[in-house]
Length: 102
Image (cartoon, rainbow, N blue to C red; front, side):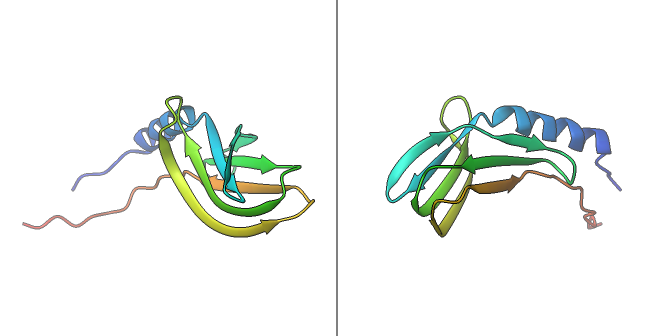
């Protein structure tokens, strides 16, 4: 039986965390570049994108790397008003046991 060790998961999550440099948020058909407002590993790796003054229908939020490649896409249908809004992206990996044939 093969087992992925916790160290491999930790190292892979660190690579994922470093790959994400920003986000693109589509509001009323306009794409806004937004920074990552916060990264947390308290309950598994998560990246957060904070919206403050923007208003309108949020239809898409994408985490991107330094070459603007899409890494994680969330399609949404959220009408944002004057209140702030934070979008969370969980990036936690976990090992699952797979039974081998043979």
